[in-house]
Length: 196
Image 1 (tube, rainbow, N blue to C red):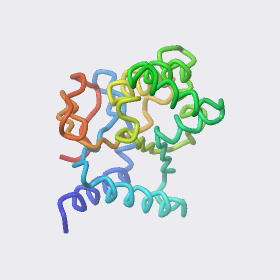
Image 2 (image 1 turned 90 degrees about the horizontal axis):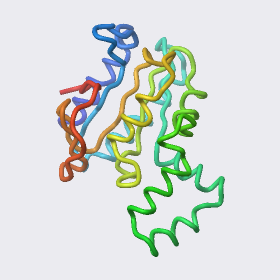
Image 3 (image 1 turned 60 degrees about the vertical axis):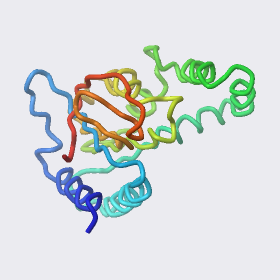
């Protein structure tokens, strides 16, 4: 069995424990986790998440597994506003940074009306475990620090105890994120590494 398979098995066992779905409460901790993995294991991770989601539908595990692909949420929003063609033109004329700014503006990422926060909060059932995926596909339009600082940390307080796991193609040390094991992102997060 490969190392990623062993770590995914550990992750599966952890999320099934009732204690995982309860905040510890030390120093106002939120229940946010990162499952980091080698980028070349992306398909293995996606397949396991799909398997876990389908298995969870039976409702025998005491919680509901909810999976949000951040990339898909962004694309759905852009399509609903007929912005896809504008995005292509924006990137070609003004570059990826301006496109990133424009997409974050339309998603209201820095506002109280943050559309990703709103969508996730409105669609979390009771007794849920939330998986956030697609960070690698979003890069550089939406980066992990923005997921923490502008999405997770802006979730309504009523969701502070809901376990949310960010699947991260790269390395997370609980102090540093390195996307694709190549590009360091901002430091320090109030999230725990799910499996070492």
